[in-house]
Length: 119
RNA sequence: CCAGUUGACCGGGUGGCCGCUCCGCUUCGCGGGGAGGAAAGUCCGGGCUCCAUCGAAAUACGGUGACGGCUAACGGCCGCCGGGGGCGACCCCAGGGAAAGUGCCACAGAAAGCAAACCGCCUUCGCCAAGUACUUCGGUGCUUGUUCGUCGGUAAGGAUGAAAGGGUGCGGUAAGAGCGCACCGCGGACCUGGCAACAGGGACGGCACGGCAAACCCCACCGGGAGCAAGACCAAAUAGGGAUGACACGGGGUUCGCCCCAGCCGGUUUUCGAGGCCUGUCAUCCGGGUUGGUCGCAUGAAGUCGGCAGCAAUGCCGCCUCUAGAUGAAUGGCCGCCGCGUCGGGGAAACCCGGCCCUACAGAACCCGGCUUACAGGUCAACUGGCAUU
Image (cartoon, rainbow, N blue to C red; front, side):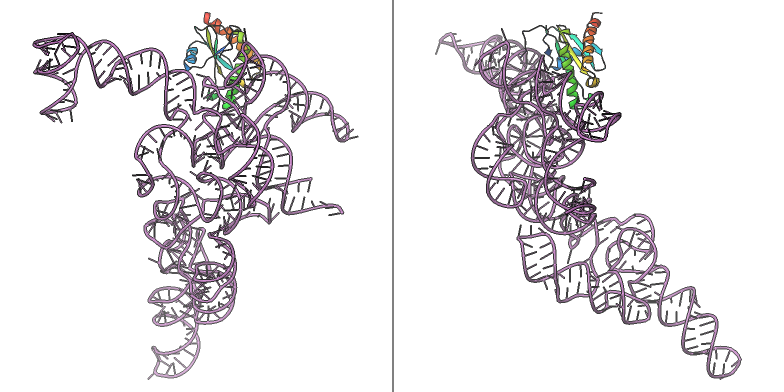
């Protein structure tokens, strides 16, 4: 199932409703293109999930938001810390924002959310 | 060339890097498949599944509605008819029944369905006036006429309305009127053509039978309900409902396997009577909910090409193909090149340079056949009306 074996940074995809609810109880950081939620988990591999609600647009637009966020998450794969679950909630800005900016904002959001947690 | 009508189609291409999902294999990898014409709205029709009935019919309710055909079926499609619109190609139509019955026809108008009569027109009579004849000078008779009243006639004309009991013309009449005639319209036995809807002709009738059924209704035909979160199965864990059996509690018997008898009072079973039941442990079975997984799940009324039949929808035959299967939901992210469009500049033109956009509508969720709605830009074919040329 998993393309395991390579590195510890392989991302695990969240699929259960309970996993999303658990992540939503943790820290969160907001940006114009997305909102990042994170919470600790006992599994070593970091988990990532995506949420795009119906208010964001029709079905092709929602798909596009989720795919761009997924590609951005893949780009900062090494930034995610183990033993944590992350959920990205999409916003409409994710459609039009340049991809480089999207990746930068995600990287800073990840470091910020862990800084916030320690304080 | 310009304007238009109808039908069909495309809906970016090609590479690089990094990914997702499914399938296969020689499994630390490799190879292959991977959104649409509407996938949409969920408006119809089916397949499939469960429930009910296990047979259809009836009632109720809902739907459809010219005629003929196609289809698994349809409210779909094709052909044709009728009506309406357009110079035309062509387009639009919820297109059965109004002498089965009930009901409605606002406002206006005299009157909205039995026909009736407001103004008007005409006749009789009365009153009045004028003229005239006679006169016993008081009047009487006759003729004509405006206003008014009255007994009637009439539906030409006016006025209202979406609609006023055929239309136009001539004759006719006191005035009028299908009262008579001609043409048109209407009904129509019958004849001809057509499978039929219907079309053409039409003796005769003298005009009667207004509209609304998207008002109730009548007629014909069709329809059981819910839907893949249908439904089937597996596993785990949790609380503990029901049934059956064994053991344990009193007395007696015993061949030590077990058998027989008793169980008051009280409580419960809605009430009364009868009957049944009451405690604990263990085992088995049944039932209920939760979570996860597997199947359902893609070979089908399937598609390409060719042939035949048919005006067509469509059907038949042959060959070949396998063509997405996700489930917090894959089918993508980024970057080049080409192409399209558009804007600006240069140029006589071909074209060149630069910028923008690189697209519209929109994402499979069990599967098919339709309908409806949305859609940037573009292509092709047939036909129509003009203009020019030959």
